[in-house]
Picture (cartoon, one colour):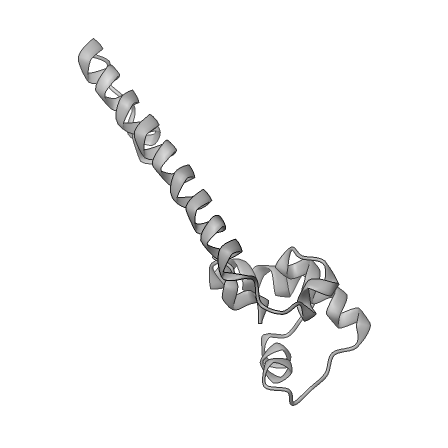
Amino acid sequence: MHRRKTGESSELRSLNWRKERVCPNYLAMIEIAQKFPSADVLDRLAVALGISPNELFSVSVSPERVIEQMQQKILENLDRAIEHALDKAIAKRCGIVVPAETAARG
């Protein structure tokens, strides 16, 4: 199912499901094909997952797309790490003390 493919935390999914009034136990029954949800529940599931309803039925993403998404995340994380390291190096070189909250965000 789609939720296994995403990087969402279980806490975020739980909040989304509660907000969209989807019981996790009912969701588990859907996943093991013991229940089939109504169109309304499918819409709420899609909203909670941040996808369109038709994506609930899509066949798995191609390996190429998964690799592309992973590469994109790696590059984004690398950019953030480099930016943070540069900020720290510049601050150190200039004798600037970086507040703890700013350092924790980077």
